Amino acid sequence: MSLAILKPKIFNCTNSLDLAKKISNSFGEDLGNVIISRFSDGEFQPSFEESIRGTRIFIIGSTNPSPENLMEMLLMLDAAKRASARHITAVIPYFGWARQDRKDKPRVPIAAKMIAKMIETAGATRLITMDLHADQIQGFFQIPVDHLYASTIFIPYILELKLDNLCIASPDMGGSKRAYAYSKNLSCDVVVCYKQRSKANVISHMELIGEVKGKNIILVDDMVDTAGTLSKAADLLIERGAISVRAICTHAILSGDAYAKIEASNLEELIVTDSVPNIKPHSKIKVLSCADLFADVMSKVHNNKSISSNFIM
View 1 (cartoon, one colour):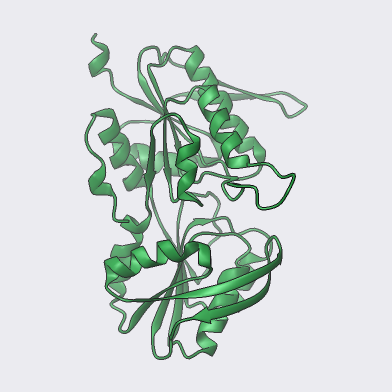
View 2 (tube, helix red, strand yellow):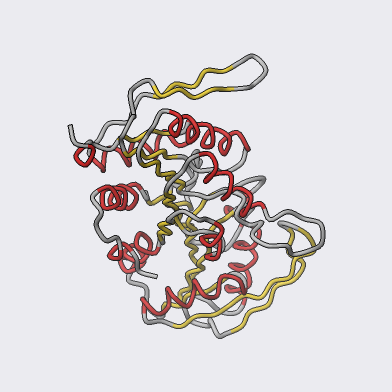
């Protein structure tokens, strides 16, 4: 059989099984057979239980902490390389450790750069990911990177809300570019919250740049971790006269007391994707699946078709 017509195979890391099932169903291929053998001390070994020689394979797994998720992806990439897979695409919906994309003080690592090198060394020949914390992380790789935007998922949902006096807000200066892109596509105003941190995950002060009185606000961010920024921003926006505040965040990490903060905040709704597993059901949280987006891009990559139609931002 010609290598050019071999069907692709899709495999999943343990933590992303539910999303991988949705992606494979949308793609039209069953998940491949891979098992994880575990030793009593916590060491584990993935094993492909079918031939992948000469094929294109996709390995789906977000690398959110714990570090075991990243380690499992690396081991599966290495196993695929040693099993002579022809093309090995790491599908990482949420690229963890991406907040460490630069040295913001002396004697700290650039973890995103280090992990990019680890993924390449392990055997990945391509990366498909979504809403990196910083666009420049693409430059840390020497392999092709398909950087997808969740705006293709969120903007149709926003339009369905049919909100009057819509205004997009960025919860910090770093996200202003993303907010302006949304406002351009939605033809609405944009405001920016300026925050200062006393330390990681702790906000000491926040101010608002722009007018929000009488407007329905949608905060835009790439991730929600402790929900401290979003909660404080929502409270500030309501205090300044906003009618309602919603938030869209691609990656729902939701650590610590995030759920309690969301419940107690002035947020009317938090819209996220399922890029990070194990999101607990909550009355204020709406989950939109990114499975169809990834499946479509994976199909186009396999068939050497353009993916430019999958980008809004």
